[in-house]
Image 1 (spheres, rainbow, N blue to C red):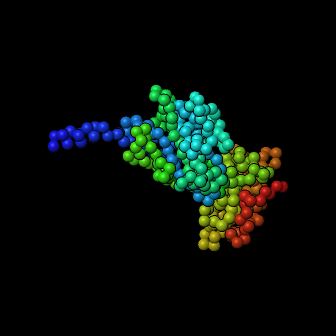
Image 2: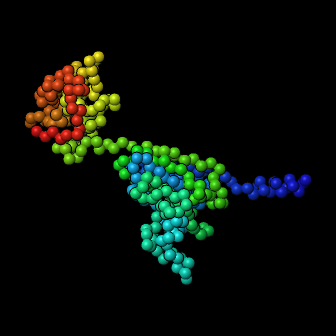
Image 3: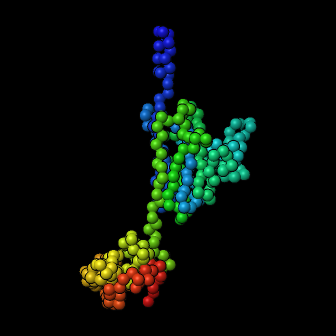
Length: 311
């Protein structure tokens, strides 16, 4: 019995120290940065196998990753290494990390078991590992793996571990005790909702890109945007649901004769300056409000922000 207890004690003492690995994902425009963190006794990560799946559109690029060995990063890509990297038979070294016949990337071959479709499809499988000699440049316990760029139609990206391709593996060949994934990350809305081709685009930028000039109405339940017709507050008023009414007049009066540095852009119905004094809220804006006074949704086209209206 003492021998058995001693054996169990030795096994417990020799058991690997488990780690918690967290995968992070953050959008900057259409570019998603994927990072990692390993905590608990500073356990290093040896390799990652992650599925990155987009909703509504396609993944168009994967970039900003380390390439090669002994560089403090995860530059060993199992699927791509096998197909595109040639090792010098005499030196045992890689002659070039450029890749041939195809580029050397962490995107797994879609023909591999359980790998997603690849660049130009809604999903990619990313495989990344580290390789360095003893005392070499090991990866840090936290950092960036790569970036993933999506097209304009994508609404969210979901990240999961790919068990068939290896999941996440630590230096001691064990999987982390806890793997925290970011789940699904929403693509942030595009702030370029006002076409650059419009003659008033420069003024829209100077104003700070106000949403009220765009086709997205201030009222999310509205069927259109009526700001250029005098609906400055973006809402319908009263039981009769008038789009252009008292609150819009109040907004115009409050901003009367103001210039672009002080005017509320939503009260600038014609999106233009008037006269030598460059007043943004003045006679033409009043004329627009009067012309549409008491109008409802059905009496307006709801196309503000979709049609350029030069003088």
